[in-house]
Length: 207
Image (cartoon, rainbow, N blue to C red):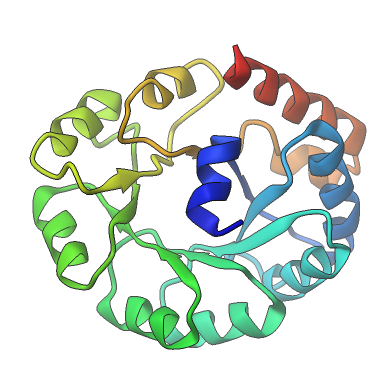
């Protein structure tokens, strides 16, 4: 299953910040147990590349690299086994490096100009970021009108309550968020709690 199909199937992307790569395997177990075998591990900590490698080796979760802002980070993500790359904004250099590697890239965009720039680069699936402070679901709906060929994955400021507003839009493949993978809970080793939060989020989307 390719990445857009995974997004369309699961509708949720846990956005994960890992301070310790040793948390990667138990987190992968928690995600799989909760019914959401996909994760975006952000390059916000020194542990990111090793955590991606461990989750990729786990085998039960499709793992991508998030907060990727340079071509060098793309290279590191690919070496670690990431299946997709997510960027907070549009960088032609990052997109080009991903295309060279043949890895799916999900660059960020929140304006019509950024969407048009992405289309010129051959990208038709975009991360709408930061969603909460860029107009929310209404802004995604407005952007979708002139760009019917574009699908969005809104991320940023989304929680369990607001996710449904985005997912109701035909142009939205999935939403990204961290409410089901709290950084503090992961750091404290509360993986049972994480699995419960994941399962509740999956159930809410299914309703």
